[in-house]
Every structure is written in structure tokens, then in C-alpha cells.
Image (cartoon, rainbow, N blue to C red; front, side):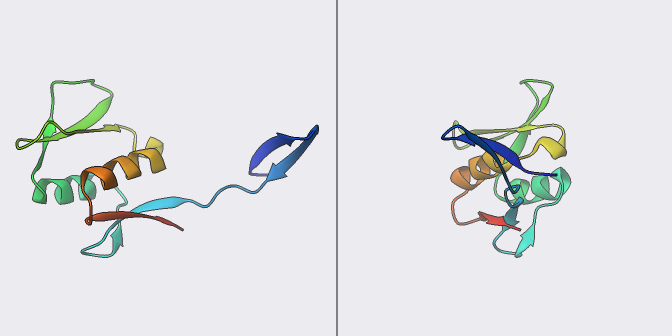
Length: 99
């Protein structure tokens, strides 16, 4: 059984798992499936890898701003919070969609 147990009004019930979300690069229409593909897109947008931070994170910054994107090194931990973080820093370039 997959899903989330929810307690409401004294009753537990199993809700089906939420839909999986993907980060989509709007120009190509393709879902980002790895950090290497994401890094190539970010590099084209002016983002550079930042190596001075937490060793458990991939971090990117832009020379022209104080913005920093921090992502877990393990791509399996890349979730919708990280996706929206990228969307906010790059408006009109990425979109988060349900699968």
C-alpha cells in the first residue's frame, strides 16, 4: 500500500500518493532527469557552480546577483521544493508539472 495516512475527526484513512512532479525546461519541453542536464541549462542561463559551501550540496550562483541555488547532491532527494526554488530564481525558463 502506498500513500499517506491522514488522521481526521478521530479516523485514520489512507490517501493515495500524490502525483510525482517534474521540473520542465520550457524552451526544450523536456523534463530535467539528472543534475548534469540541469547544470547545462543553468550554465547557459549564467549560473556557475559554487564550491565554497556545504559539501553535501550542489550550489550555483550568478555573478550579477546575490542569488544562490542549493540542491541536495543525491538526485533522488530532489523534490518539488527544490524545483520551485529553481523556478522562482529563473522565471519563464522552468515549470513544475505533475506526471
